[in-house]
Amino acid sequence: MALSTTFLFISLLISTAQAFDPCASSASGSENSELSVMHIYGKCSPFAPPKRESWVDTVINMAAKDPSRVSYLSSLVGKTSVPIASGQQLNIGNYVVRAKIGTPGQLMFMVMDTSNDAAWVPCAGCAGCSPTVFTPTMSSTYGSLDCKMAQCTQVRGQACPADVASACFFNQSYGGDSSFLATLSQDSLRLALDIVPNYAFGCINAVSGGSVPPQGLLGLGRGSMSLLSQSGSLYSGVFSYCLPSFKSYYFSGSLKLGPMGQPKNIKTTPLLHNPHRPSLYYVNLTGISVGKVLVPVAPELLAFDPNTGAGTVIDSGTVITRFVEPVYMAIRDEFRKQVNGAITSLGAFDTCFTATNVDITPVMTLHFTGMDLKLPTENTLIHSSSGSLACLAMAAAPTNVNSVLNVIANLQQQNLRILFDLTNSRLGIARELCN
Ligand SMILES: *[C@@H]1O[C@H](CO)[C@@H](O)[C@H](O)[C@H]1NC(C)=O
Ligand SMILES: *[C@@H]1O[C@H](CO)[C@@H](O)[C@H](O)[C@H]1NC(C)=O
Image 1 (cartoon, rainbow, N blue to C red):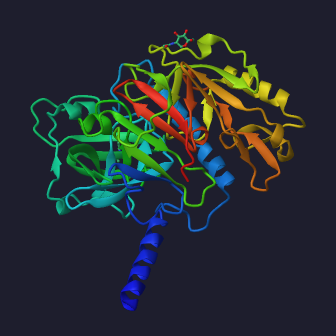
Image 2 (cartoon, rainbow, N blue to C red):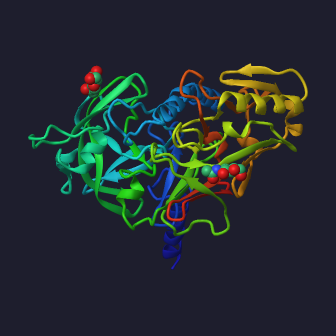
Image 3 (cartoon, rainbow, N blue to C red):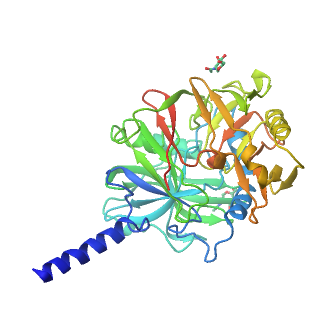
């Protein structure tokens, strides 16, 4: 009796410890289709640096890569092109999820990217990849896809030579300075307790340059090669995520796939579809308020235009929200007007002020068709590592490209549940403390 009580007590202790260790398992909750979402430099991520730098420095360093990401998102708008044609440029995503590929499943920490459709992972024998690779020969369900398959044309951006029956190779550039060569393949993709059979992805054979995500990328865009498209009825065209706070030690939020367990009461706005950019999640941002003031901006600077690519997208791979320059200037000027004291700059942030004024910082509201998003203070401001400065955590989009796209980024999405409901063509946002 005493012995079994002790045993019970010990097993309770063990299970409690597991329940509180967010690094312990791939599923984050009791739901079959729920995964932990980790910041790429978070505690549970294999990419966490051995020594933590201050989180504001991490954000500043990551935000330094935003302009090339935004250029990438902007560069293809207006062209009639397929989602991941060769030569296109991607950039780093900031959150990873655990996925298993093959049978039995091989664990990979893949970057979650809502603005790309395809998935790709480094494969055994890859030249220039990091040591963690997927080994096709150890999977009983692996197969490569032939050049004649429609998916091949999609990833290559062109058809294979007509009379050649061969594997589908493609070369894709990434992050401006990098590229990879991959073979279009298929295998089982395991997410939490779900299995998506015959999932088509790029098996990377060679990498050049240093910015390809080391364990691959999971495309959550809305085009034909994306997870939602390839998983058929499994997720019914619905998923949501909650990105953890940048400041949280474990940096763990969640990705919920499918309609189960999604918030019932959630404000929504229609998703807009741009046939020229089928991967992107466009929404109708109609205005921005700083405090009680509706910032004066010309409506055409926010208007959705599929032909030019203008409008606003929600993206999981850009760090801080970028508005086209005249819109950002108008927001910033109103913000500066309402904050007392001298304005300085820090990294990408040009509107910093003494942190003692944070209490009187105006609330920012993003107005969408049918939905207002009042940004929590932590989603508006970033503090310097010393804590003495607070900065408006947004910036202007780079002006050297087709600068028509506004991008709602990670920092503005933290601790919110963002629901992507493709079946009803809407995007929902609800406050949720997910870390
Ligand atoms: C992809 O193609 C480009 C241009 O042809 C080439 O420079 C690059 O080395 C190729 N990448 C790989 C990994 O082979
Ligand atoms: C976006 O909202 C504005 C203002 O309500 C409206 O005039 C416009 O038609 C909307 N655009 C789309 C594509 O729904």
